[in-house]
Length: 386
Image (cartoon, rainbow, N blue to C red):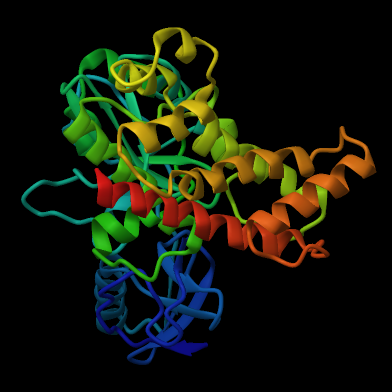
């Protein structure tokens, strides 16, 4: 039996170890002001690192109320188990989305008395992003691996996040501001809440907390900035997404193991985001005035990109800037199972040389880290020139 302390919870992080607090409905027993209280299906916040529970404000209010009632009635204990069929609906939109009002009521930082329910998280299948990555009327930008935005011809711009369960999250109030046809599309991929807001989306939008970014996120941020500045200054997009973005995002986590079968999916994904998504039409339009039109026809994305760096941005070190993009393409080939050992050794040696690593290096993690940093540096150089 635990003695309850009713301290105010300010954030979604444990005050002892700063770990993320899991929103849960665990069974829990405590003693408060001489009353034994047993909770079942009551919202709680749990730190899995400290094995410690915190109490959302509404839970505290319930505990205070029932403990006072128990003292008045002379009862030594109280059992709390609320109805499971109650659903609070917020006054948003003509489309009825699946969501759980308990997320809004209990997760720290979401409550807005002046705009009740706006920051209710609504969850979707990852595949919901596919439409926005493939249709020419939409723009999907990833600021990091799990945080981005969707826009359409200046009609709307909505932020989204991706949680640890690979569910897409948007705010109910933001969704309500979308055109009705977009809301119906989103509803088709809408799923029940898994109560997990652990994401860069939550950290940025609610906590306004920007921790030191991972190398991958720093790369994505530099890429997103280059896209935005290029669009603003040159009237076009350096990158567009191709293919099913859901499959790309699924494989964007840093590998835990570094054997080929574990490395290949993320390198495939990075290649699609950094190389295959280069917009050849934009690059050709930029190069038309400085390169013979017939010569442009035979050039593919990477060569167009290199020519653009040299002849449009006038970067004297254009080959150094384009180098990591070529290395990434080769790393994709290297991590594939479809080439001979002799060819792998040849590609591996070339990759190591270009990344200034030991020619004998066979550690894919070392290659990966060097490559991520080189790609980020390339975007940062492009940004200065734009």
